[in-house]
Length: 178
Image (cartoon, rainbow, N blue to C red):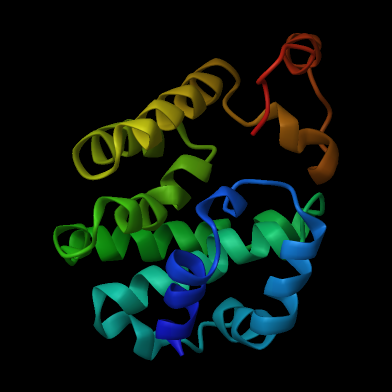
């Protein structure tokens, strides 16, 4: 099944859909992968972790599919911690040495999505070494936001957090959210 996730993500769809807000694409993921998402959320895909590709597929399910299917809801971020832990384990296991740079960038995406300054120090170095330059550029932009605010202000409303006046002003700027 992990090969189905990877084929869908890297072969079947246009890469332009990866980061676009598209309700039809979100619905397609929900229809095709909701069962796998539910399994991933409760840790039932542990057998996938035997190979780098399986680890990557589980991380894509937890990190990307949840963001799509639960867009603009707290559930979009509900799997972030487990995705980060799995990514850390995959990095330690050497997965980045066998994946392509594009695949590696998705394995590293939970680092970018983290709201931890410490994690972003690692993320910056990992993206620089293992991912395409454009992904490293986006990590630097994400890190700058975390360094400044300690969190992503564009998540505040969705997560029921109050925004500081500085965050409110920041969110008025073009390109302030991802």
